[in-house]
Length: 209
Length: 209
Image (cartoon, rainbow over all chains, first blue to last red; front, side):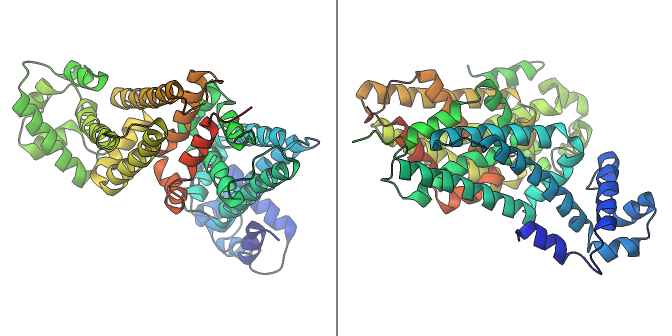
């Protein structure tokens, strides 16, 4: 079970009533989209949905617990787009190219175009919510797996320590995964969408003395 | 004449009275440090300094023109630290290492430790003030000069287009130059301060088939 899902379950009080939880999440997502996440209280939300505050607290321990689920859904969408793009791509260099392209495109689409999610995503990234940390960990793991495959097939050099290299490649990706930093790096990305990945691939090239 | 200095001079109205301008900048820096840049008006500032608002407008066209000078001073300090660190360093790979280390350290020191400057630096980066754009241009130029030297000496490969490579290297540096993005990437930098620059240097290595 991923950290984000277990965090959401920890936040749950009372019996698991999937439909009510989903109903609250949907109503909260719509409400936050109009009034913003930061300025809305659980009382505001309860009034708007037509539930009592106590009833909402049966399902979610706090406003952040609701935001966590919305954020986890959003990050799951990005990951789902990335895995769909990687489907059938075999060679490690191609997989790395697809990872860079798909994750930046999906982040731009979700974080910057869907304004309703942006304020929640910013809170999640700034305060490093469990869903954010778990997502970062999984992307880092994906980078490491691609590098490991590439080393095994001879596509990538294996003279430097794997953890050092995969950490550095992930570090280059980080500003493009974070909704706060993304608007500050997206212009350069749009001007030359392949520049970073080609630099990274040159650094991984095995043809060296 | 740099863009930031000419912008400051454009903003000037009336005769160049260096001492009064310096006095206003010093008082404004101190005032912003207590009350913040965003929430302070030129009227507030005038009252606090004991000058009339009209007198301040003789020297600066707007609050942003004052902020521009404070910001330009701050960026000039970072550049001065970087050039001091590069003094006497000859080999291009070493110059690139020193550039990465010195500019990230100076940015961390100035943007994150000197809270009084942070709000101004954030406004400058978010709205891309002329001082910020000029600074970014000079750093990008410095990266390109180091790469050119390294290609001439044979330390770096010269198969890829110089502008493509220097752009990508600069792009990796960007999140560390910007006060908004810096807090979101500083943890990874602190855990492994050389990871990025070593990846970049591997990508520049000429030993390839």
